[in-house]
Length: 418
Image (tube, rainbow, N blue to C red; front, side):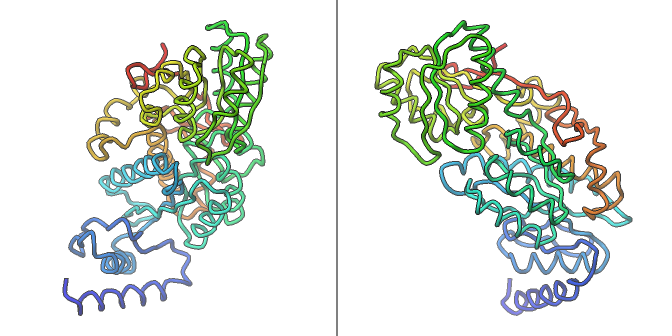
């Protein structure tokens, strides 16, 4: 692309955005990482021509041919949990591509959806900053966040600015306790996950002595507490409780203390960047027969890589909200499509972020508006058949009839326990 054309396009984009600042209609320029597809009024731009892409999007919206609607997404795209975040983002991108292929019209205008992706690095302060950025950008809705520790404080920001968000990953029950009408979850919460694991440990495996470790995050503490209370109610003894953090990699001291208590199992409330090294160190300490339980935070493909061949991986029992992919209404076909687009990137939550995107748009379609002030009320009435499940909400924004699946690892692969 010639320099003169690039500068002209950029100048046009700036003028259009400036002119539109006072309008109520939701229009937007393209996220720098996602070029728009071709439209009837403009040729498809080069994926690398970010400024020209923004100009093309602005021109289409201003001319009345296309209404550009941005969906925000927030997750850790940097740091130790970036593999989760990228998987989540992939789900949103895939949904937006499929939605745009439908040539949807809302409010009498053809709509083109775009993603505005933000990185919260799994940090609560960065999470609220990202949420405010999306509010200031006037996105139409948000999918995210990944972590309960970022989603809970961000939910107040979204509530205050009137933008709905749907999480397919954050599981701490406290998320929906404030009763915000902008907060929705399409996955089972920790009450279901922690209890399912504890019941399996006590009723199925007949384990009596259990040690608990958590990473002090909202997610880790929450799921560990539910597991603890349920296990105790079933007669199990909690022989030790230890704490770490979500940046640690050396667990030899706390594992040595736990080993001295001779537990049948260890429950870990946290994520796989810690669980993988912990499994290696358990093997080094001769804890090769100790069962290892955890929630959806450790229930990933990545944990097999992080465990680096440790035989203790075979002792893992983890829980995930929702049905296994093979039992999801559209899981098998969806996963094949995902793997073709994003080879070796699947972790856990992308089917849920995919569905979350569609749930937002389904509400827009039923309200015949992309304005959050108009369509948010329709989210509460959702009855959407997604890839993961039929999605409908309780009055507090929790998913109705949320399923839970337990998994173990066979030959290094996550396998559902039937």
